[in-house]
Image 1 (cartoon, rainbow, N blue to C red):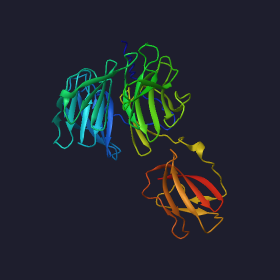
Image 2 (cartoon, helix red, strand yellow):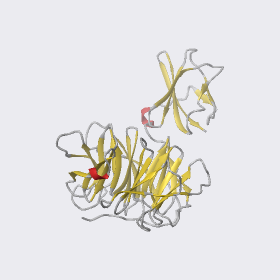
Image 3 (cartoon, helix red, strand yellow):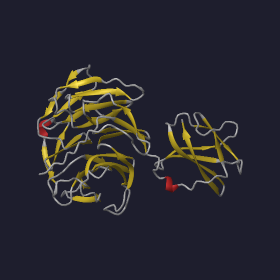
Image 4 (cartoon, rainbow, N blue to C red):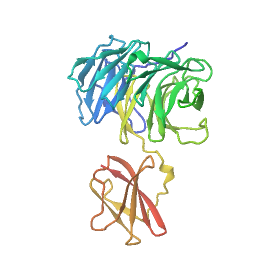
Length: 367
């Protein structure tokens, strides 16, 4: 089987669409997989063979070593956080090791399962799922690594990154046996006979899907391609499969995005040029809103209280939506008090102002 790994080491010159370098402190360590626990980002370092952490609230972060135990230049490749037990499982080219986040650091990670490469690693309902050489394996965390079982083999023996949405397993693979993972499939694990269903074929003949990340009903997929690296977005609520179109969120950046996490509407990604970048997807569901201007809101950007001007009625209802179209606030409007948005994370939002039969929507930025 051909495994496509196209890591490019180029200094950042320009990153498009509001993607900026968060930190380059891992230069030389080759950060790949990342997981987020509250505001703490855990980083798997391929070159050093360890996992470290940084605080995302720190504008000038300093990595702190959390766990060692991996072979140098064959460090953590895929990681997943077990919220129930407060553990991180980290897969490399040859094994899966466990990090107990309740233990004192730095620590030597625990040998968990020496069962080959982790092409994909994810967790659902206390079951660890691992893709190795085109096959899907499970480990019941209640039983431990002795429960390691193969449950499915991909049609092209090229199963890559894994993630879950609505209790269905999504994974990267290819459509023609070329070894280039340019498509995404899903498996309904509740079915008596497991079979794959094509979710999307990216149509990038040389494009390898390195990482998938699900936020609400949207999937972000990093595509590493000789013709240009991309981050695309799919709407998983699309009723017709395979999905015939997708949105390019980022393009033109100099190296593949190998890890993706998000904290509210802010995303963090590890690039193959050993930088961690941050960006916001401000185009999500914008087309769902008809933005008009007869009603004004102020201040904009806003920090605490949002006020409405040019009211057409004393009986106002205000709904606030994030850029994914998710309603996060629904309240009546009092002129003297405004709308308190202090608890809303920073980012772009839409205020939908309702009164009787009238309805208008205005964009605003929360600082």
